[in-house]
Image (tube, rainbow, N blue to C red; front, side):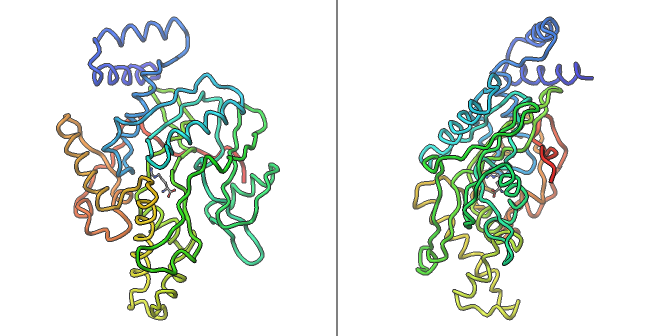
Length: 349
Ligand code: ARG
């Protein structure tokens, strides 16, 4: 069974990279002789690209070939892993010209964070301060000795565990974290809301199975689609819930649903996000362009003789959904291997 998965991956790798077919046999023999599966850096890099191409929930897959892989499988100490994560952050951030990047660690390494950079959420007597999605992880960090400043946008520390050792907590120096203060092209009061978001979304809690071997620490990033911030992170009622405040400031009638105050507020918040990132030279894509890029990806895949799979619920943007071509179609959500998927959190809550 394992051998079959291994062989499948090596065959795909060999075929797509136009290697001589004997490569598969040769690698299987090497692996058999070694008694353990040790992929080459080239195989790992291609596997990570494939897993991106197979991410049914990702609208940004047109760029799958451009993924930059840091092969970090040799690192075994929290300090070295921390330094590699800082390098990932710096390389990916690139002063705002974001580069799609992944770091691959040995499976004995576990990163506790959901994203490398994320804002804390504190439960207080007067409600949650910060990002409600981070409340549980923030508690863990505090338990581990981290001191939060009880602000709305406190960047959480990196929590790194090696094998069964206790996890180690590292603050990320501010100089490595690019953030964008939000302002609006015409609504001058917008900047007074004190909103901001970080530049690079770096998911660090997903795993990927490559030919039967699980890689559980593979932090990766692309760049944001504006709606992730403007229609979800800052808008959802169970996140920063900013729509009532923005609508109020806009002078809209929030007592009646039919005034469409939520819709007006959403559009202005999303305009602010796109405007601010653009003005600061930080890569971001609006949802209309992202859909166009996805259609191009579909075309490209078709030309390569492959079916495109996708998860409709995730691919249709949360803003003006029916303006997206994909809204009007059904998509095939078959999961092709390898793919990134969720895993059980390493800590008990
Ligand atoms: N939706 C997540 C967030 O808002 C990020 C997921 C990955 N997004 C991306 N554009 N690569 O933080």
